[in-house]
Length: 215
Image (cartoon, rainbow, N blue to C red; front, side, top):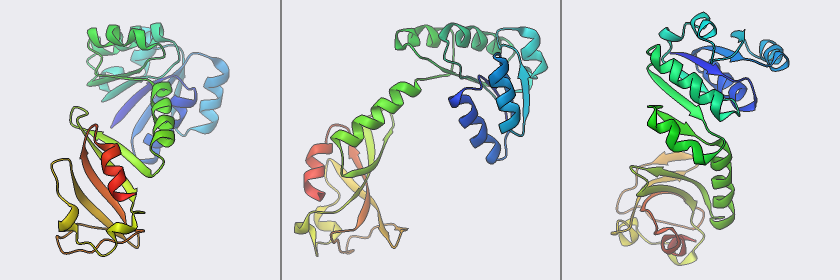
């Protein structure tokens, strides 16, 4: 895929590194000379010094050929205008960082495909670490009404129980069990023990109840 990223700050550089490592073609647009030079030094990709609100710069980046345009600067007004322009050039998908969540609706109203707040995502991750310390990872699915929890069994009452004795219920189902780091699709007769790592599909809002069963 071909991705144009506007902004060579921490978010833009990290995203570009990940995309390049996975075999994608990336062009960086950066207005600040210092960040532009840093991007040239750190990334093996095209870097254009300029702003994504300038149509000439977008055309130099071949924006009309891009599969994705990502506005990753910390300035909402710049991100919004560049995304509107990218849309007019027919970019398939347009994604923008938003710093002020009060601006989120404005971004969506002009047809931007996805609006991301790294600050809010980081805060959410910290909240999960504090309020859900026994969960290794949590991912939302569907419209946010289901989650997959990755957790380790610490409740000794589960030792020797078959999976069929505890799963499925109306609130959750064990979808994977890990032995020696290898994923196994659970069978009804598989035995549970403390130390087992599980992936559990749960209904949103049932975390605390389910956590008490396994930890």
